[in-house]
Amino acid sequence: MKIIGATIAVLFAALIVIGVIPRLRDARELHAESASVHGTVEVTVVTVKRASPNSDIVLPGSIEALHESPIYARTTGYVTKWTTDIGAHVSTGQLLAQIQSPEIDQQSDQAKADLGQLRANLTLSKRTADRWVLLAHDSVVTPQEVDEKQAAYDAAVANLASGEANYQRLVELQRFERVTAPFSGVVTSRSVDVGNLVTAGATLGGTGTASARPLFTVAGTDTVRVYVNVPQSAMSLVQAGAEADVLVRELSGGIFHGRVARNARALDAASRTLLTEVQIPNPKGVLLPGMYVQVRFAITNAAPPLVIPANTLVIRSDGPQVALVRPDHTVHYQKVELGRDFGDQVEVAAGLDSDAQLVVNPSDEIREGVEVRVLPAVGDTK
Image 1 (cartoon, rainbow, N blue to C red):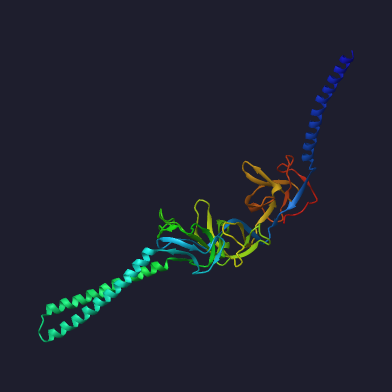
Image 2: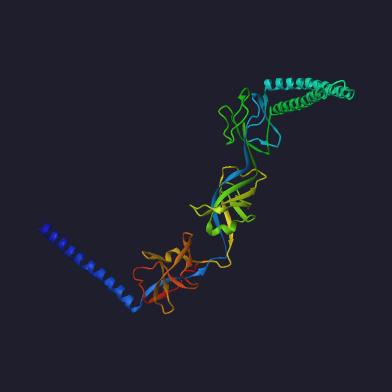
């Protein structure tokens, strides 16, 4: 009997719940409908304001050295010593490595000796030509013979010039036995050691031939640069000479001041962005090539756009809208064109006027034309 009684009680309670819950829901819906009809819906609104005339745009970028060059050998030989390693600061003309090239040295000595022979031949040819000219005055020799001696002299002059050029070429190759820094900077790589055989030359692409490889890489970091892709809407900010702040989170007080050096003067057709170079003085070498940074450009807008809180937007199939409270306290859903999205706030490009009142978090009760009662504002847009 107890089991039957408990079962009946449970069934009775279930029937009550099944009957009461729909009634409560219907009552709430009826109350909401009645509130809508009688204008008792309460809403919180914000007033549309214009953004501050001073703002900024932040874009990602990566630091690069202003000058960076792989250093190749210009003569073939064996490395006898190297003087700098990675991280070393070098100045223009400073010795990086010494190459020993016996073949070049011997060829230079031979070319120097050949110059003595060529000078002797030139002297003899000159005197012979002069004598034959004098003999021709006395008609002892024919003009043809005089021309032949003069031609021999001219050939001796040309041979001496060729010999001197060859000797100077070998002297220059001997100078290349000293590998020096082309500009002041930091050594970022070293791929050579004592005893290595190095080969002269590199391909035009800078990758080197199969047997030629860069001995060092030097980067000039007294001034560094950052390439950023600036959107079309902000390209007026990046003319040459414009100021920019470079932000590096990992560095204490990581704000560095730079200037726009140049831009590409043409937009990328795929991304509609303008490639821009910002140069930053780096006398202390704090900024390193390869660092990730953010570049901030200041914006001063004489006609700043309107901004609204993101929680006033209603996204519908026909586009974004806002619930606008009219002076007679009725609601009108206004279509808007949006600009930049800042997360909690959004720019409005068209569709609204300043000082308009917008409903915050409009619910399903807020329908077109419904009369509402405005609660005290929770704060205006900034």
